[in-house]
Amino acid sequence: MSGRIAIATEDELSEAVAVRIVQVAAPGLIVASTFRRDGFGYLRKSMERFCGMAPHLPVLLLTDLDKSDCAPSLIRTWLGPRSKPREFLFRVAVRETEAWLLADHDAMAKLFGRRDPKLPEDPDALSDPKAALIRLARKAPRSMRTEIAPEPGAAASQGLGYNAVLCRFVREHWDPVRAAVRSNSLRRALDCVARFAARASRSGE
Image 1 (cartoon, rainbow, N blue to C red):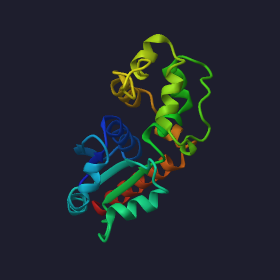
Image 2 (image 1 turned 90 degrees about the vertical axis):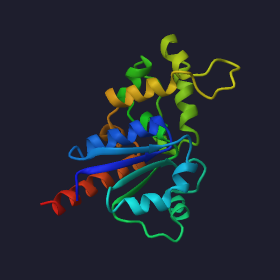
Image 3 (image 1 turned 135 degrees about the vertical axis):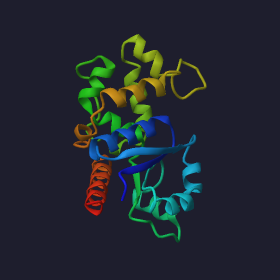
Image 4 (image 1 turned 30 degrees about the vertical axis):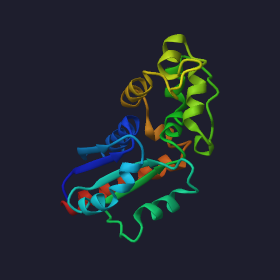
């Protein structure tokens, strides 16, 4: 098994998070390719492609649970009758990738410039983590508030700098190991990637 992996995600922020998870959980792996479009539709339509690719170039797919009942049910629905290769790492953020960011209280407090920004203790239990993050941003200093939160009355669901600011935050400050203490779905994702990397290392010996 080579020390390479491909990453498939819904959007720019999820991609940054997936890359960071690989860097932390499996520092010996190289992200060789990335696949993303806006939303989960592209990922679901590409299941056949990813399953076929995985034995040759392992794939880490990260999607949001959103309104689905649970991660195992979403995975079964997307896979359909296909068998999932061991090299296809299918992980689901509960309920959105933003929950994993909120789980790192130390980094979030620094991002928002507040000692106690009332961060959730169980972000996986939030019904709308993105909305919770934006509510926190509205109480942050103006420079951060205007980047992350949309203008009052705007049709957009987020500020113009939302992805740029949060992707930089993920790359430079977010600690997935620290965040995993408050997010079971993130902890399982880290463990999955670490176990895969260990298997790949043993097979290459």
